[in-house]
Length: 179
Ligand SMILES: C[S@@+](CC[C@H](N)C(=O)[O-])C[C@H]1O[C@@H](n2cnc3c(N)ncnc32)[C@H](O)[C@@H]1O
Image (cartoon, rainbow, N blue to C red; front, side):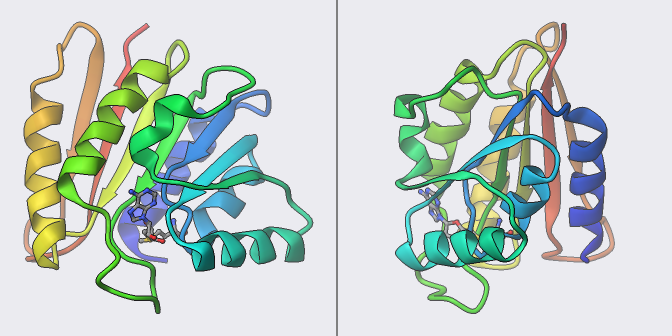
């Protein structure tokens, strides 16, 4: 597993409790959804039918459950929720082995993470993996970092983990509510 994902997943493991709800806002091939489903209740979103199908199959093969919706995470505030989520996960970019033209986009991602902070339950967090190795991913990472830096420091703890000597390497943004 890539080091930024080890870091993210280890943090989710420490952070989540069985009674929590997590949203996987980019379920892709379902690896993150499956990992989260082993820790708590999960809702998974993706705009691509193939991603929803791959995720459903992976979950079924591992006898795990999640509620999956084919929709853009830009409408995350319209999701029916049993209770507020404690964690929202974004693993940005395009579907591995899929169409590289279908990728997360700076504007819709920003809209989604802003709405995400509003729907989080007390003490909740966002986990965002950025892939600046492609053009839109680089724009997205810069925009997310600028936005995250501007969040009020008395309400949010913001950490951006980057590999400084690896140009274009994935980075990981963690934003958690101060309680
Ligand atoms: C890097 S992949 C996610 C990998 C996935 N988490 C996994 O574990 O396999 C990014 C996914 O984001 C999806 N995506 C792109 N734009 C989206 C949007 N606006 N809302 C929801 N999903 C989106 C893509 O279809 C793609 O499947």
